[in-house]
Amino acid sequence: MLDTDSLEEYILSHSDPEPPWLRDLYRKAHIRLVHPRMLSGHLQGRFLKMLTQMIRPQNVLEIGTYTGYSALCIAEGLTGISFVYTIEKDDEMEDFIREAFAASPYDGRICLYIGDAAKIVPAFAKDFFGMVFIDADKREYWEHYELILPKVLPGGYILVDNTLWSGKVLEKTPNNDWQTKGILEFNEKLAADDRVEKVILPIRDGLTLIRKKDRRWKQTDS
Ligand SMILES: C[S@@+](CC[C@H](N)C(=O)[O-])C[C@H]1O[C@@H](n2cnc3c(N)ncnc32)[C@H](O)[C@@H]1O
Image (tube, rainbow, N blue to C red; front, top):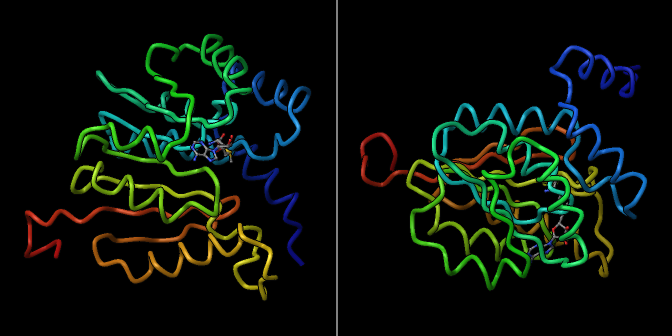
């Protein structure tokens, strides 16, 4: 029988450690906040950094900042003149987030927007982002996806968090469980969406990696 806690410990002890500003942020979140489990954490954080290094986007959009943990990991992976634009709806998080950014070396690479993504995203230019991380209200995943898709460069990437939702995607969903329904709807519609390529990675709570097809190169990318 596989001991998942020991396996996770093994994975973390053989991956890069969290930098000190993220370790402090993680600790503060657990002392001061009610839902610290929502932040990406050590393993996914290192993965976000490495993906950003691989994709080399100029502009990244994040929907759902929470503490700023994932925005800081993405910022760590950026090179050249490049920025993370991150949107958080809960204005009570603003001081916490700004404090976390200021305590890191990446304050100058992150632009924080406080408000609803549905109101803020339309103001961004078409084809502006090389990478987007969707990690907000599960009930709004498909709306967020449709909203951001025109803003993503052809050949750009979208990452969507929690797409396995603690395995609830395999269970019979109670009528009032709107979060699970949102994830199920998102996964079904995405599977049938031929504007993009996609793969679900079983990392943490499920992370879907999506690539917007580049229709300018029809032979290889139709
Ligand atoms: C899971 S947490 C984000 C965690 C963070 N991305 C990380 O990995 O460390 C989700 C956040 O999305 C925010 N949120 C929910 N709906 C939103 C919306 N429509 N626009 C912007 N933020 C939203 C919530 O207030 C919450 O702080």
